[in-house]
Amino acid sequence: MQLTDLPYSVLWHLKRMPERAAERGVPPAMMGWRWHARDPLDTYLARTGQKPAKTVLHPRRRGAAPLPCNAESRSELADDGALWGYAMRDVPDLVVGETWLARIADAGLVFFHTPKGDFFPAILTREGTSLECRETSYRPGHAPHAAMLAKGAREVQHFARATWILERAYHNHSHWLTAHLPKLLLLKERGLLGEVLMPQRRTPVMDASMRMLGIDPESFRRFDPARPIMVEELTLVGTDRFDPAHMRAVRRAFADPARADIPATRRVFISRAKSRGRRITNEAALWAMLDERGFEKVCMEDLPFPDQVALMQQTRVLLAPHGAGLTNMLFCPEGGHVVEMADPGFPNPNFYNLASGLGLHYWLLHEEAGEAPHPLDRDLTVDVAGVEEVLERIG
Image: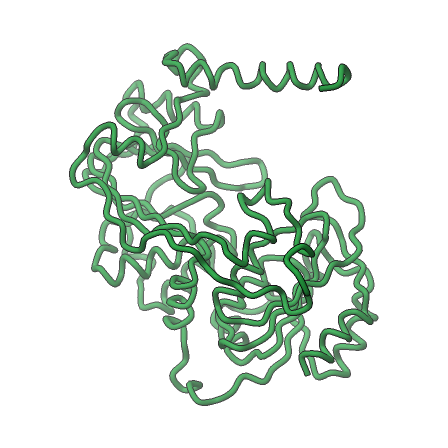
């Protein structure tokens, strides 16, 4: 470590001190409820011996994905995966996580929203630890709800039995389709939808997608995310967000029988012209080329969700800058092509992972990114000739 790095190192350790104190048994109340000891689910179940505890429906397994169609070797793929827990380079043989159901006695559910509106849930055990699951983890923002639970405040919502499927940012288009719909399908197949908790407010996509699956969104019990919850017996559902089996199950569930024997032929360009960031600065030049090649330009936010699904079911080539709209490849028939235009400084592997699991041919184009405080807001300047070359190869 260089001497100039010392202040940053000291600051990092100071910030970690309250969390480390909680891990060593210091009562959360002494730290304003901002920290709780973290308890991985399997560790907690093994230590407490709760029965029935956890049922594994699909075990962990090694996946297998081809390289992007325009990559010649794995070394070309980014190995930076700090933000996502895995990197582009990991996708070809990524381990697919298990699918499970677990029951926890006397569990508390606490929440908070960021200023941007993102939702963060956490689960507190009756021993006062934070039950750690994917996209569900205790943070300092949960402190007000944790204090209400500890004091038995009248604001606490009570349920004898409940099933929890929500993760961070459930309202986000991509998270809802890939992390939450598979859980609902799983529970529907097992006749376990009756005790699922849903928030009071839901997005139009959430409601429309449930109705398309034959699930009435008004049938669920609702909770107020402004208040914590105490559940005597809580059922949790865990999935790997990009498990190919679940992604293909979602596609089958939305399949249109009338199109079973009709080949997909449409070529679609998803524009982000109406989005806050990752717009294409030279979209006019790109569109001039795409228009000549028979593409249709759409802004997904202009289409009701059923129309988005119908469009994708007819799409053979899907071209888009990195963004939630690309998640709609979930409804494209197997064998189609997905071309992602992305910022190489933000190598998010999720769409590569998703396309591979769906049996779609994935192409990755690195484009020039502009400046913005957050990587997700950087606009892209596209190499039009490079896009045209890929389209020539697709044919």
